Image (cartoon, rainbow, N blue to C red):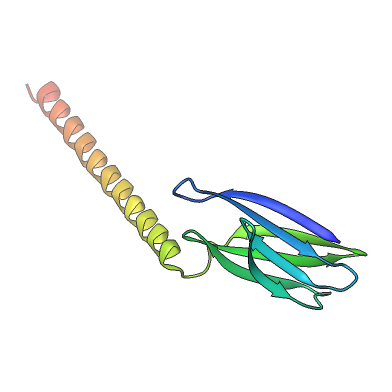
Length: 124
């Protein structure tokens, strides 16, 4: 029987334990979070992906057959358009815009400084 356990801290600092039991002979799958069953599935002998929320994060658990065994992967799904992911993308875009505005202001300031310095140094 394939078993895997992950620990995950969400953005609020809450600790979660995610577990997976996979009967390699029967193909039955149980996915649990902090000893509460989230998903039960049967006859899984092929590639399968499960999506579920942990706190604000959408998680993606993958079961991938590899030769005579299975590989289990748990990742945060940052590509889906969840409210949390959309807010992160918006914040990142705003941060990039502020950096660009800051760079433009710095360039204008440096041009003004060099122009001022040139005017007083060479126009006397």
